[in-house]
Length: 545
Image (tube, rainbow, N blue to C red; front, top):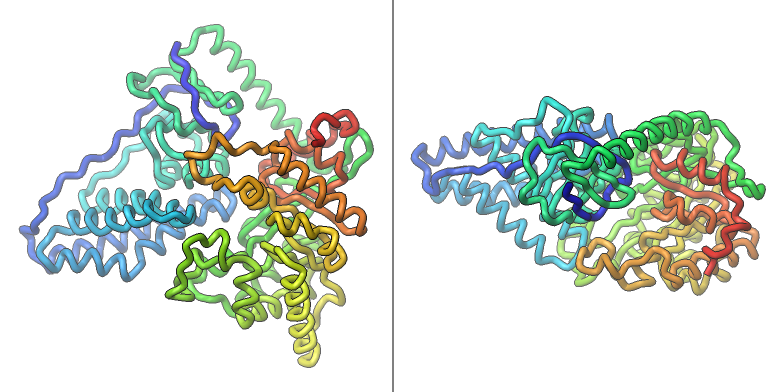
């Protein structure tokens, strides 16, 4: 028996024979023998087929996961449609090169540029370039990646998002890669699909195709050719897991109250109106975070007031009177270059993003505010502001809301009489001025992802510093405690919408502090509810810093 360790992308268990995904090898000429016009014809056809294939993956992904995670395939289609990228390819074809050579040359150049960039958003695009390069070359060559007809655990040096979605869900038991990171799109897709997966698992060389494998996502280990004793243990464990899932479904309509009498609201995070129905099916009591920036990004242009209004209205009507917290767009210079060419920042994470960007682009911000105000007539709307670091940002935003409301009232447009306004606590500055912020707003929502990153000065997407990132770092826990206390003292609601909300290790901590609501992805809602129903937070004082 061989045991290997890695980083777990999803804490489930998978058992089955392994199948090695070998890299497709493409051979092609540098100079064309068919002529420039024929190469151009082949190229245009390959681009169209590749875009259609990515859109096919997107539609398939929408059926299997939350829209936010499926969007990567929509992004791929946009990248393939990019005129600059296509022009760089066809300029090489014009010089007499084959389409294969031109695609490889142009795509690889862009991939190298992305890998050298400091910003993690752009570094992720390098992985995307490799994925769409492989798709283009496979279409041009007529080769395709064969999928196994029998269920298997997929092994590879690395995988792209399309490798994950291409496999039928009932055939892909799990996957293990030697490279990759927990922040890669492939790892994120695995978690969204509920597929046990390990990345950065070294030592796969020597594993035979067809060899039996067990992935234990909770322990972050894989067993190859396991002993009968280990097999029996995991078969029993998987049967228990199946029974646990059936029991979780029975909790859907249970009131979420802990053993020590503390009520917790469990909300869902979403990025598109499509997600609302799925979250309701998962047991969500409301929406704790609607990321409106995805509406801006997928449009390819700044969405109109009417487009935004219809999107927000659709969600509010779908939720049928349940609270929907919509975050104003958390855009940054790294994500809006198509709208504002020429904006370049050395460190976008510390630059013009979130509320700063909105206040710099008041026309865009007011368009969104008007859409939100109009939509408020169709449900229980709350609004929150991202990346707040000063009182002035809140006050200026409130003044814009007042201005837009006054304008709409003059036009006789119906709106909710009162819309709760909150702020996300995700900067150290917001933690230190929480007492003052609480006097200006109706609620806090703690964004633990960015807050922990800024507190520890660690890029969570950088694999080189992964070992230095500790979720239970005293600074993080004390910051959360400080924010909850200041919010409670002011009599306002406090929620958590970062990944900590879905981590059962933090549930008792949040209950004890008096957090009012937790917002998370759909699959985590019922497991967290189970944890709350069986929890007495008074016995968890050792978790409080």
